Image (tube, rainbow, N blue to C red; front, side, top):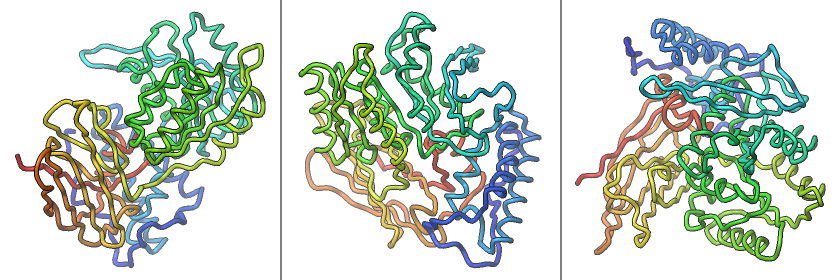
Amino acid sequence: MKRTLALSFVLALLTPPLPAKEATPLLKDREVKKLSEHFASYFKARRDEDYAGMTKAFDNFTKKLVAEAKKKKVESLLVSPIDLRALFSAPIDPLKKGLKKGIIMERSVEVPMVAGQVLKIDYLLKLPKSYKHDVASPAILVLPPEFDRLDQIKKWFKRAYPAGLSETAMIIMPLNHERKADWQSDEGRQLAFFTLNDVYQHFHVDRLRLFAEGHPTTGAAVADLITALPSMFTGAVMRGLDSAPETALLGNASHVPFMLLSVGDDDAKKTVADFAENAQSQGGAATVVDATVAEDGFVDEAAMASVVEFVSQTTKVISPQSVAFSVPTLLHTNGYWFHVSHQDQEYDADKAFKVKAEVSSETNEFTVTTPANVRGFTIYLNDDLVDMGKPIKVIHTIEPEEGDPESKVVFEGTKSRSMEFALSSWFFVLSGNFGEVYTNSIEIEVPQ
């Protein structure tokens, strides 16, 4: 940035603060809509590297937020994560012309990459007939089976996603028939994430109601996505499993429920049952639904009704008090509000590389336990987790390979809410993907 926006900019008034974990939004729908337009102006300028426009939009946005805080007689709207989520999740360039509801839309986008390269992303999208650009809609990211032609994919799409499911949520399907990328590879994940990013910018996705769905050949890839980025998804659906997914990391996704349709022969059904048992043994939730497959290869209506109910009624876990996960690769370093920022060595399958972080909202304390090879971590903060108006303490325990654990206080102090941090973290760090708004962070470097 050519001009650094003041980190000390504080949206504070001489009025009592809103208590942490406020469950009722302060803003009404029309107020959210008006403010989110200012947020969209800021995002557009930042995306286009229009620094003068970004500064102007930031100043205007914060001025409007201060005015609304005065009306509501609260310290700042930064203390209300529920309102910030609504403001920050609105589409930046809502598609109004050429918008098609209830039918399959084809979309293509060119994504700028490093060294001037451009990556072309194609995907299919089906919006509910009731979709409105100013109302957040649940969404399902589908990793489809492999097809050779677009007409095959569309025909399959129509049968696999009948009206009941496609009226419950928007269906997002990255196209992979030309690239033939392995969904579990970096290329496959890139295809999925860039697709989501484009949908977020043009359509109003409820980021707290985002599901991932896999079919027999892609179920393992869905499990990989969920365990790598558990706080991105609300839940996961697997319409059978051809092969056993990685289960050692299912503890990462203990807050994300799975629905598994048991289809196929006895071996395939056993694979589903074993996966569900592993998820449950690691503290997760997994529901198995027996399904039958018709001659056309699609599951029966009763099973589909269970999927519709699951997507309709499942809500995302917000700011869990306890996060525990294993960290085998750089992809597996995020768990809700906790991020491993530096580690000494690559994952050794023979050694347990487990991280556990807990927060007590009553005492404003975080307790973090890591192995010795974790050299740095970051804790993201908002008023759903702690009272940002009071001192915060972080206690870190190292569990060495040999000897007794060593615990020490690694942070003790206060952290002010920052609008600039909230916006930056939404775009570049965790929350832009995960649907949460964080207003500051604590970065810890563990002494060598």
